[in-house]
Amino acid sequence: MFNVLREVFPQRRIDKSHNYDPKYLKYPVIVTYRHPLDAMASSIQRYDRIPSDEEVENQIKEFADNGIWDILKIRGQENVLMLRYELFYNNYDHIFAHLEGFFSIAIPAEKRRYIAAQYNIEAVDKIVRNYDAFHDYDSVTQLHGKHISAYKGNINYYREFFSPKQIDYLRKVYHKFLVEFGYE
Image 1 (spheres, helix red, strand yellow):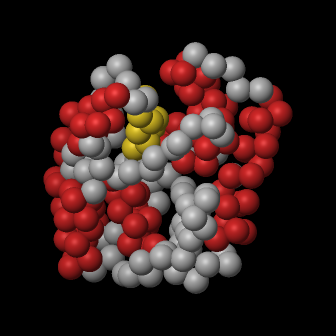
Image 2 (image 1 turned 30 degrees about the vertical axis):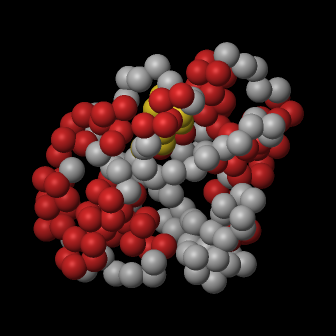
């Protein structure tokens, strides 16, 4: 999403954050959210780790530290556009339509085609293969190693990644999130 915004608004400064800061009340904020179990599976893979119970606990803490619960507080604010990953995954028209509505702009067809070609999963995967690890990244695009997981962002792949016991546990941990955002 960062690069889509960077391309749509080349004269604006685009901040990327995993935490919500009260200063953002002054600015338009785009929040992307995803099924937390898929997000966690992707996060574990970016570190080249396995989904052990210990790693799951580490990720729960990291997600909390990175503000997973903040979006429950800020959704519905006038300056916040919420975009659900499962609806915009491989669907740039969804992204463009919501950005146009939120910002009251029109994104030209040529720019739409350019963004979709430049930042689709396959194109990004080709770029990030040149980076060895998650901490290796391009400072302009903020694309980094392990940006694209082995599952290529597929939806519901957590079911293959975690054990049934871990899935049950994580569904309890994230029950409020899952219910509030219509995942359960």
